[in-house]
Image 1 (cartoon, rainbow, N blue to C red):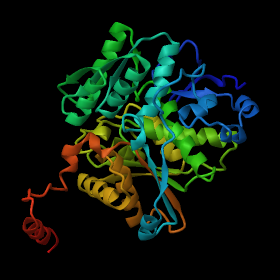
Image 2 (image 1 turned 90 degrees about the horizontal axis):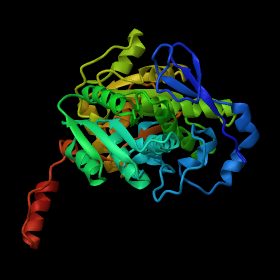
Image 3 (image 1 turned 90 degrees about the vertical axis):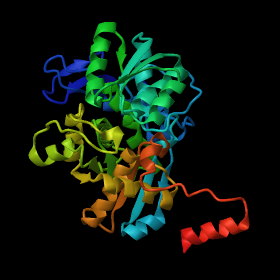
Image 4 (image 1 turned 60 degrees about the vertical axis):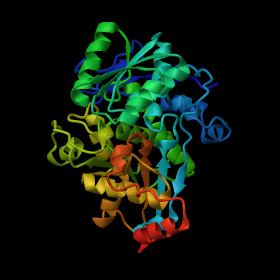
Length: 412
């Protein structure tokens, strides 16, 4: 029987340790974000790669011994995690690198990587006795919470910018969550969610503050390592907004390295939209400051990253680097990714692929290196933006003559 190995949290700023119980969202000493701590020696005694190999559960719960929850989850009708890692041999050859892998998290229940965080967060909320969960989101985290709250019979209260893509707002409402579009930015919605949680006493599903969420997201790194038979890639490209995903990616590889299951942590590359690049700027200047976010990649459009310290740590501790890409590069990458791999990514997810393309052009990845790109959300979440580079052809009459004329117009 695997024993609980989660022992508490350390502050990413002042380093203060706090036990797992009672739970606090942030450091009581300085107010900064927390990082989950595990007893790796205990895990080594109870858990092994052989044990994992024999586990037929393909969801994120196969990694329960290294997650911050106290008991096995209730049976779920939806699988979170276990998404494909797809090798792209021809594209790798064209780019001039050894191997390229796409981690396709569009296959998660709500269509995004955020389901990993939500699944663990809901389990944690249940253990603490909560029935209502609050999220502020540009759309994906909100849709994820709405989806999995419906599965787990929890009440979801969601705040989004009113400018969020209609497809995401529709998705949230279809799942039955209570949606409150806010006149303002994601940061405004986030601040309001904090006030509501404090006033109502509900559970906060915030990727930028709640340390449990990052632990859910780290399962994508655990899967990548396992799917590659513990031979991790040289570089991992991650789209970055609030900083929680990239922080989780680093934590997953860090945990495996501490267990001795992998021999190094891959370089983790932070890719941001040029119009929302607070993390990349901080990596250069040494200071994390707010920006005025403006990008088509709504899921990573953030003024001040709430989990910025973990994001910066992820890049620095892995010897990675940061890249900025323009909106034009993002949209071009989205289209190229879809027509060459069959993976339709939303702009935020395509940002990571745009980062790989720029890295190749700048000579930041060598011909003998392997890359993995995180595809964090499906393009179906934002059709309006996707249509910026493609146009639906004019209709034709149902006869061969009309088809031939249209074919000539399209193909010359």
